Length: 352
Image (cartoon, rainbow, N blue to C red; front, side):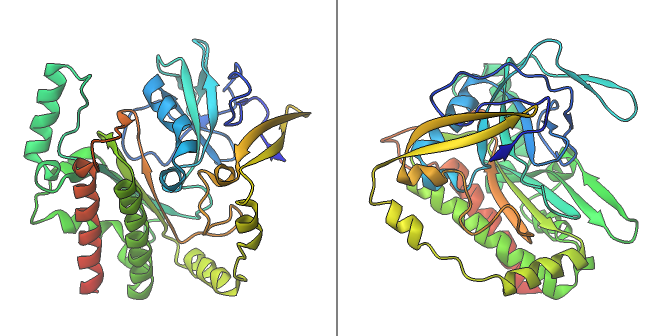
C-alpha cells in the first residue's frame, strides 16, 4: 500500500484515471535544490518532490514506461498534479511562496531522501543548451554562456552544489556563478571540492567509485536511446556524514544477496494486472491497471531498496527540453558531457 501524506493528492502513473485536483498547503520548499528554477516543493516527509512542469516534460516522463533502461537512471515518476492559482505555502519565516504559472506539476522521488547529510551537485550537460523552440534572443544568450564556460569546451558545467561542512555543522552552497568560474584546466578543482575531504581518503574513494558507476549507467542509457535533451543535468548525491556512511556500508555488507528468480519468471507473461491501494485522508482507494511484466519496475533502481541506507545516488534530471528522436542517432551533445564528467571523477580517483 502506498501512503500519501494527507492534503497532497496525485494519481499513480497509470493510463486509467485523470489527474486529481490537489491542495499542496502541506508541502514545504524543497531544501536540496542547488540549481534550476524556483517553485520546487517537497512533501513533509521529504520522500517526493513536486515540480511545476510544462507539457513537454510531463509527456517525456509519461513516455518512460516505454523506455525502461532510460527510466532506471531517471528519478522515479509517481504521477501528475493539478495546480491552481490559490496554491501557496508559508515557510518558517512566514513568507508566502506561490506556485509558478504552470498548471500542472510532476511528482518525483526525492533523490536526496534518506541521507543524514546529503551533499549534492547539479552538472548541466551539453554545448548547445537550447531546443528548436527557443527564441533567437535565448539562443544567443545561452550560446554566450556556453562559450565562456566549460559548457563550450567540455559539454558540461557545474550548475550548482552544496556540501556538508562537518566542522561548521552547516552547508556550504555554491551557486551557478561558481561553476561558471572554471575553465578546462581548473574544472577538476570543483569536482574535488564536491567530495569533502572530511570523509577521509577511503570514504572519498568509495563515493567517487560509486559516482563513476552511476555516471556510466547514464552513459549506457543514452547510448541505447535516440533522443535529444537540451539543458538536462546529472544530479549526484552522497552521504557526507562519516558515521552514516560507515553504517550504510556495514548494512550493505550484511545484506543478503537479492534473488531475481521471481522477476525473471514473471517476464514470461506479456501482461499482468497490477492493483495498488492508496490511502488519501484516511480513505483507501484501489486503482488497477495493465502493465507488461517488464514495465512493473519502470523507474526502479534494481540495486536499491527504499528502506536501505545509501552511500551515493546518481540520476539524470531536467527533461523540460527532451524528446525521443528515432532515426537520428545518439545524443552526442549530452553524451560528450557525460564522458567528460566521468573522466574527471576517474582522474580524481587516480590521484587519491
